[in-house]
Image (cartoon, rainbow, N blue to C red; front, side):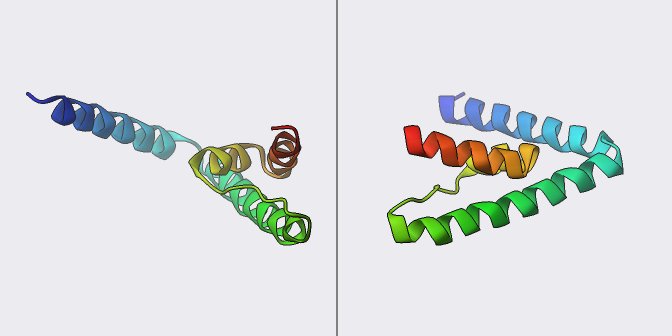
Length: 86
């Protein structure tokens, strides 16, 4: 077996585990995560819109999306503060 096949197999198992965990969560928690994600995404968009005038932007990738999806508005603020200092 090649290394690529093994890594793909492990990644598929992890994704399947995550999907099953998400489906086993209460519906109320899933709705809360979706709302946090949408509000946080809007916050990042607004920060990037206003920050474009000052040469400031937060890149949107899976890590920032995860932070904002879990934490919501406080996550977007934390990312903005980290972007200033890093």
